[in-house]
Image (cartoon, rainbow, N blue to C red):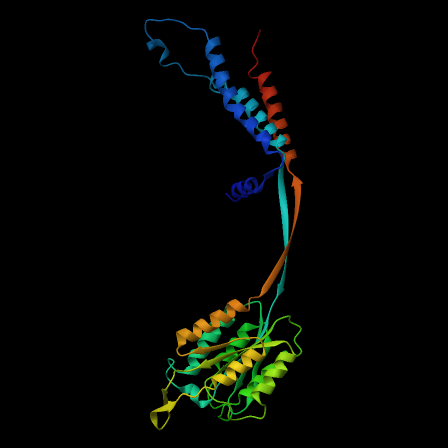
Length: 337
């Protein structure tokens, strides 16, 4: 069965250099029709009153195989016509050149990210959306920087997305001092990208607060990013007004949502990027989808095709069938004059 499948696949893969010769195959049905007509014309006829004596007549093998030489001749002509059409097989090789994008995700993990206006909270919702974003970009190197009162690299630029996703999954509150050091978070992300050789370098900075900690001025960091050709997409995360936060030992309290949108807009504008505002998880998902569309990985490919003629096997089959047909014609099916 495997051999039959292989033969079928082989025949399907063939292309014909001179397809016009395939129209000659239309002659085969005409030749068969002419042969049948001529055979009937040359047969002797006998009129009898009843065919009962002939009903139990058994044909011998020569009578049963009477049309075999003619069928072999038709097959010979068929394979010759196919050979004339020059069947060809092709071997293709594709070289893919992937020009990926280096991306640093700068994620705010300050206490305010515990707010439950996103379900279950801002941080977990952001992690879920970022996870999907990473999974949709298999050809890019991506890293993760987290910040609150200070910043540090949770995962450097890597194409090993499994390791990156593990680092993202284990990101939690309280691993560094609380606060919102946007400048330090941006500066750490820039430091991870400044030696990158990628033609496209991007930082996606998410924050839900106001810069109130750290040592680096956010706008100065934005100027440095521009110097290195890094685009910084900024995202303001949170609803307008108040948001509930579940504080262990205190229960649910409501806190004012303060996002320095003006600062985030300036950072994005300074680096020729864009600022987004996400007030719920679905809008945050839409933000990352839009960034994904704007920062597409460029893939170029070169194809090499090598074609080789495959007419010889068809000629060989035709020759073999012709020899068999001639042997049968002048031996077992020989007609005495």
